[in-house]
Image (cartoon, rainbow, N blue to C red; front, side, top):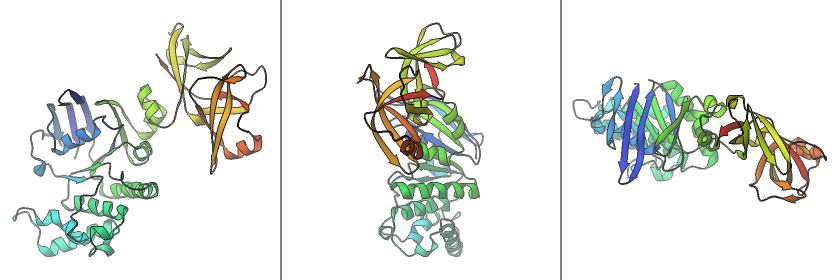
Length: 361
């Protein structure tokens, strides 16, 4: 089922939760609504579900206006962060619940319910837990049961609100992979809300980045990572370093102490000595020992954390021989390079951006 979201506005008192939000979601697509707390992503999900009413705008399911259709008639399945399983029911009874409360004329026979529930428990790889109660399950198992229960009523749309938010990092990673495989098998149109950039980029077909009630960018995970449309998107998707300077005829000059680092910015070829800033990801900084006369960002190494194959360096730009009051600069280099070079905290190093994204101030 395709979903068209048209010019949705939603206000809570003086707070604008959503401002003129429009989005087309293709049938069978897995979409991530990504953004910080308070950006409007959960409100948008609830409006799609029919749990919340928009002040203006419309929601269309497969070409039909469902803006005023009751939540029960939208054929959507929900999975929330905190499972919402019935504690007094077994796993089997939880999954069967949606089928057993259907109107009599739509309700499957008991033998059909038995078959369907066991099929769903097999699908989520937990058939062996059918007689257990939610309190006897791990967090990851409870979330998979919640998903099986949502799928039992054969929803045309599956809505997931921070589905793995309450789980530890290892379980989250396992469930992300599992959800992607499950979606590829079922092809149910799925929308999930998350504030976790890695989760969105790893699982979704397309990512919708939201900020302050508006959509900043929509694109494939690779597209939003490689070509962020705004400073917010660049800053939100992973760690970045921010450098201020001036753009002039296709170049940006970062003035650090007496030196000027030049970055190519052909997209700003018309700029004439205008204020600008550049974002550089930690892994896009070359790091080597400073030699007098070198051109680049001269910085003092404050701390290094070596985790597996990566060395994460924290540095601060220097003024003369002293650290400046500038923000911490983060760089990432191979751990092997860090060991081979023998860098030590307190040393003066030279940083050279290999790649940067320049925005006009």
